[in-house]
Image (tube, rainbow, N blue to C red; front, side):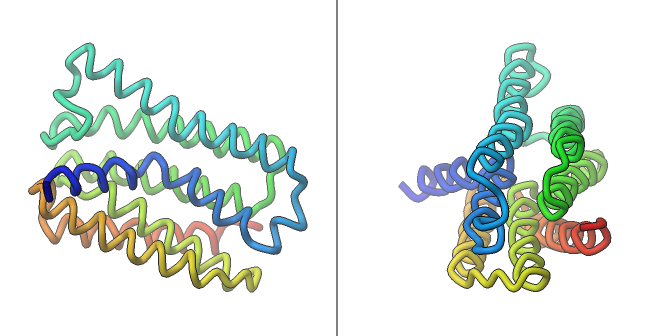
Length: 204
């Protein structure tokens, strides 16, 4: 029962869902609700969902069929590099498309930060199985703090929910034996630091 719950948490809070969930947080802030028309929000959602969720999932399915990976969990360190690198390319495509469409700077910097996180994971995972789940939530929390600081878009409920989600997903990964506590903590730190750094350095 607990194992099934941990697996469900890992699926619901999968890192490829974080960019889309992050957009929901951004568009729920009073600043972006008043600044960006609904059509623009819908187009942004579509671009991000397709390139950071749908395409990576299709790619993973193809890799599974071709036996490049043994499962969607990618429990073996050596099978994680190529899928993560290809996913990073999809993430960069999302950023590049939004940038060319003159999307608001904060949104572009958020997606660019997500790309940098996945790219770093693809490199690190060659030697060390860092937690992508924890990195995704770390990036989410970093984005929420940056949004609050830069635009005074205070969303304490989203922040609390993200903290709880990070705790749940970290516990789930440890319970399943997928990662060690160092890999979970390292993933969270990577996502948090990279996202904050990217957003503050990227020209908004």
